[in-house]
Image (cartoon, rainbow, N blue to C red; front, side, top):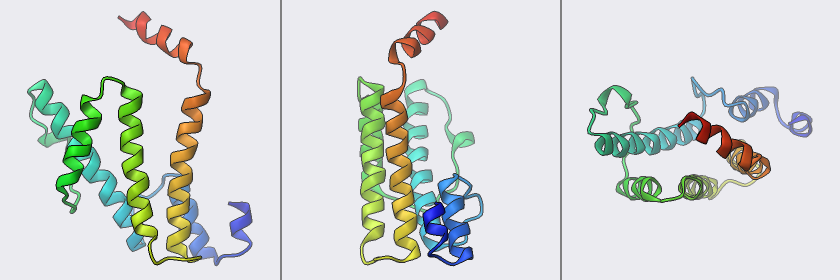
Amino acid sequence: MARCAEFIPQKDFGALKRISGGQTQKPDLGIIKKIQGFETMLRNELVRIRAAHRKIDPEKYLRPDGFSGQSIYHIALAAHRNPSPLDGERLLDKERWNFLDELAIGHYFDLDFLIVYAGKLLVLERWERISKSDKAALLEGELSKI
């Protein structure tokens, strides 16, 4: 981020900083709206699937998204049905990555490209934290709750 601050306008740096920090409540750029819309759509599908599995009404958990996509349902269902929660999360993050790749098409060295790059870095940082976590301690903690 410090390196970017030297080369891009302050307004653009602010947008990049907000998405990197996860603060995108009021998106001011179209690409951020698309990323948020996709994420909301994906999470809504997971809510619907989990609610159907538990036989509860999902309506109070859904968020307005404005996106629609039949393929997202199948991805969310595959992630939900995966016997390994970690593999299910990997599947969801792969789909997020693919969506970011689609958004990057036609953008070279502009703000949209930097925002997509920041989104990909967030996915990679998440998996870095997962790979470095103490899995035995996490498992022991969860088993002690039972």
